[in-house]
Length: 258
Image (cartoon, rainbow, N blue to C red):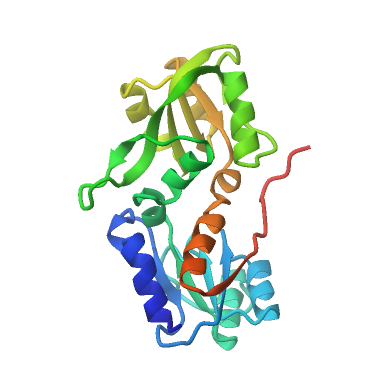
């Protein structure tokens, strides 16, 4: 299948217009006319991920996080970024990224995570004005009330997470929950105004956590990598429908717990 046809299909389901203004999505490196026989799905385009793609004869890497966020002044083999760019070009591997457009889309990553948690209905935390039924974050109600301690176990099991961090009383019963995958603490105040008992996200900093705690918000940090690694399963399902061979490789998580 030609690269531009794969991109057309991906952007039909996960439109680029859904990406946040600061984001960088789409074909970052490569040739839209290149024939693609095999795709590697990786959360990040790390050097190990690129080396694995070269080793396995991959034609295209699809990532969630953009390898290039801002203008590049030079491409130098002595730098990690420069070396990765050169390796991709020399080995004729396309690099394509779906980030906040994948998060926001209807049946995108936000909704896929909720599906894994057994949630069928949800509202959007921060709606996208361009496309209906899309936006960052989801707010949902549990059919049966749960304590934070009980819900942590559900998160760990269903999302295959080893450990989490949390703020609040583990015996506190919660009913209404907001979830923003990735790094979503900029949305906690908006979620709190929506009347949630519990906010779930990743990458929670100390001062953000302290503010949330003092505001009386229960908070679970599931981790950035941990909360988004399932994006690969979501995309693999799409590539299977397109009858394109795909593999998953993640060089992570970044942090290890002991």
